[in-house]
Length: 210
Image (cartoon, rainbow, N blue to C red; front, side):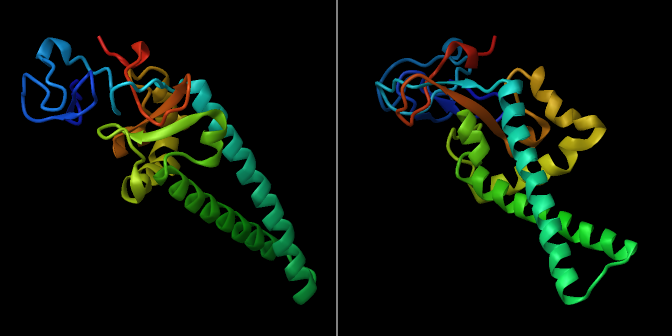
């Protein structure tokens, strides 16, 4: 298999890495010519039974909606707690002080979400993504992105991908690998499990390109 962006090749039969333009896999010995290297994205070992498909835009939207609802709930809870603490220690707040307290609550909620998304993505998916059955993996490794790549992905998702009416998120609707802008920046893809759970990624028809 060939990854046209990451320049990574995998054996379509056993998932082993292929070096250079090797015509045969050094692991299983099968022929892997250019005609067979059509990017079906395989990883794992022989006999893997779990298929993974690119997550659809609506599956990703559902996961994001859960996160946004949780963020709003956290913001309102923090606003109440900050206001309560101010009222008990200082007294009645002026309008400008109320705006400042609301800004503080929003900053705390966003900071909490940032670390939640960073740590979750680094391990392969946030709680909301796992709830929907999604998994974030490196496009070149098909493994959890790790802290560095996850940091890039989260920063881009909270900034660049939200520009122009969230065009960066909408990009995943027509991208052939369902990548949003922050996926492209971090070289990640979002997949959904199909079938039994074995922890391996294997080729599926929907992950092939033509």
